Length: 400
Ligand code: AMP
Ligand code: MG
Image (cartoon, rainbow, N blue to C red; front, side, top):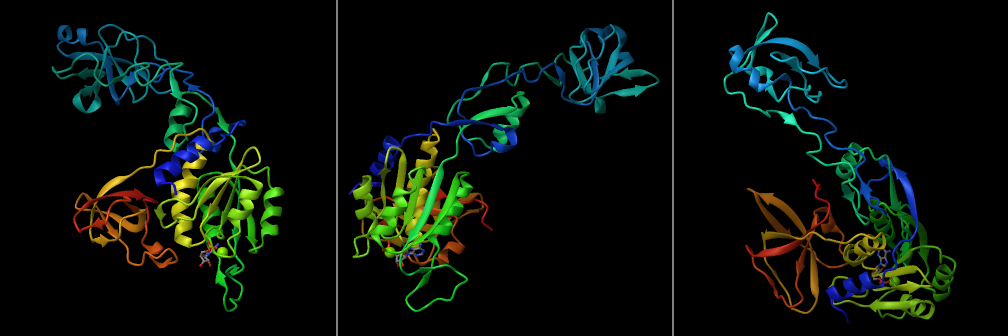
């Protein structure tokens, strides 16, 4: 059985990344992965300009005029001013071009302006409150290399560099199906022995949050023929994700069908929860994940395997964030598998603290109400005590 790290690196070596590229407008680009080098089309700032509202002048003029200069002209945003006349000061506003001949800006709070004359303090130095052309970035500077996933911040930069469209890798198309004779949709009556389905929904929602195209393939019976037919008729998907039927019980057909139709790259990983997880490929380019049926196992394996796989498929480099946090309670266990505990991460007097939630059974959804992180317990660890520092994987940080 593979370790977590072995399974994750197996995914990265086996993935067959996206080849198709499309070009999108900036407002369609958040969450997309850059497919070609993006370079600045202009210098930023594009011209020397003022960082404050005030007066532009040449410091060399001050001493000879007793630090009082007549006011001549104005530089406002959007227009180029004429040159500064020697021996005068020019009114200037934030972002407005610095006139030729000026070497500094004095903020309006520091001067006395009356009767067309401005009195300056003696402390004025050259180069005050000036944003120089190109000090942020220069025309043709590399902004982004292929594989970067774009955020709103990135788009602010790209837009300011004059770039209006971006080549990105096409979105992965992912088919999601649940398997299990016991599964019914909420909103319908629950017959004895049945349960309400939750994994398919959670998987679809997480995929959509990752900005991929997630298609609901419904729920399949525990019937090899149904799964076989589904796989054969959906070879155009980039990923197929099944839930359930992945352990070794009598009805656990997913492994059987996948190994018959495709190639299994790994099957079972030394983690808890989520041991019965499989990854492989059907045909040339359809990857599959068989995620376990237990709801928490399904969430954990999505985070550990599906997320990095999708990032790598879009040519990105998965860099999962882990934070050190001080535990607010202890947890004991037998070493063996790398374990992920649902946890609540918070800041207490400037310190990150984390609580391992009660009810860690992989069938228990109640603690998800409080969950905003997983605590990672290493395979050889027998747990932790209150006050120990543990590794925490943050989930949505804005749970309130
Ligand atoms: P399995 O992997 O099919 O052996 O299922 C393991 C456990 O997860 C069983 O208790 C199933 O009833 C439950 N389960 C399987 N699929 C789902 C699902 N889509 N939603 C919620 N629970 C599920
Ligand atoms: Mg099942």
